[in-house]
Amino acid sequence: PEFHEKILAEHRRALEEPGVTRSFDYRAVTRDGRQRWFETHMKTIVDRDGQVEGILSVIRDITARKAVEAKLTAAALTD
Image (cartoon, rainbow, N blue to C red; front, side, top):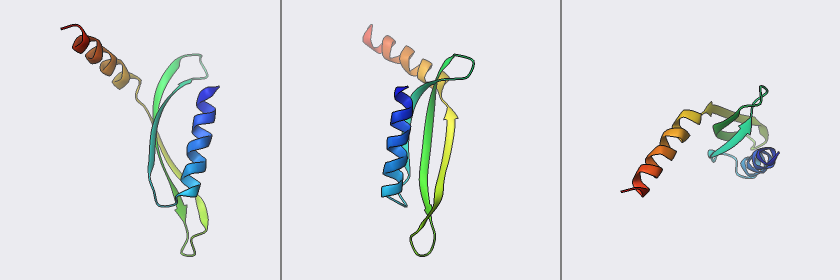
């Protein structure tokens, strides 16, 4: 799926720019088949020598927020 490619690309960017927190939104299909929106914040963790130790990722479901944003956008367009 397209969201896999986006996540992999963001992981590569995070590895290329240690110390920079990257944030992005994407829509994915859950195991039960529902489409949900997620927001991810990630940062590469490096040791004292600058060697990558890992990536810290925080992911949260923002489906409700996206629904509210869509309603507000629709309301703004229908003055």
